[in-house]
Length: 548
View (tube, rainbow, N blue to C red):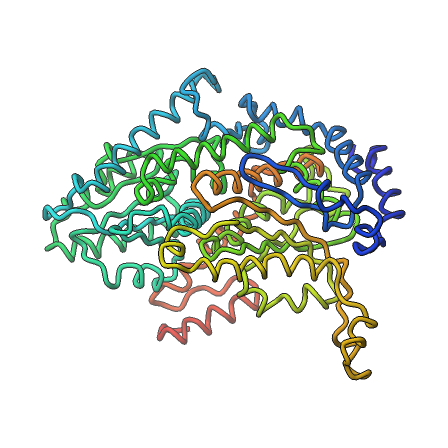
């Protein structure tokens, strides 16, 4: 049975007919306590969802829909390690990666918690040795630069988190992240580095990922050539995050420096596994564990709080309200922190790879819209780019604003607190302007010429959430990421889809492997694809100097 068949869904549809056109100006005027009542806290996060086009009854109906969809039962199934990823017959246990308990969760004959903490302890040992200078390279120099090579979740997670937590990072070390098979990515990352003091972290579960292994092989060539041609140098300058010991050894990496992770860790949920090794080196094991504790705080809140008081569930349910009842097709995420510049990109994978699905768990077509396009930019940068569309455009774009009461230490130490106050003034002004707008009468009262008045009207009634935390710390980052993880899961359960597979990324990879030989061959290839692709292959070969 699809979600549209339930009585709870029909009640929500009828409710939307009654309140969907209400303006936020009126909702606030009718309820003086709205701005302090339609809020929820979890850990260090404060969510103000009062500037959404909904009422307390909307929240009650959305919570009932979550109960009807079995969100509580599905959540417990995840935490128990059941194979909720049915198309791949796997457990989904990223929550176990940040569970402080060290034993007692048996999944498929393995004590998952014990395995997780064994890897974390080994990661901490490497991180301490690199940070303390005990890990030296082939020539005896200490490591000064760490280059993470991965793609997808093996890059986006640690890269986003490293930038977010730069204020907690060891500034005597340099960190770079390579993901794109475009050769300029690796070339720029290594352009000014010394091979003698560089450590590469190669992240690939199977150690066969095309983009990652292509970059890793070129990085190995760069290193060996830079260190006099000795292939033995690889063992002191490469570590692997993988489960394929044979391929790792064949590459030249000492398997003692290989860190495994498990099938029950999806790539976009993986940076709290060994995938986060470069991050642990950057911020140190103690701060890394603070981040894990932040994740766990939000995990437990999501698992136990009633849905009308459940921060991640409300984020998910409110998004369902807009996607399916208002027809919204995108979601803006607007962090008012330069450190979170990569956060929207991280959420693109988390949200769109998880819930970009058109069939339900049972294989039947979905009967409602699913997923949304996620995008955004940090702070005032976005205001001078796309906020025009948010305020006066013809499409509805719900927005999440993320801000922090305190500046980070680097800014405070340099006496830049006043700049942070200006940032916060913008952070407060934008959701207020989106919600309440400016009427023609208000514009005219400012002395605006009559012909210009329509151009300066802001219709308002543009919805937003406002998320606030005291400061961007490792713990707060963990809470924030976990909140969005569970937001995605809430959506998926309501829609009846599997949020943990990603078959849609496979076909393009297969075709790329078929087309690569046509571009690489010295002789003109056989042109047996569609007419468009064949013509493009000819054009690209001509441009590269090969016969078409």
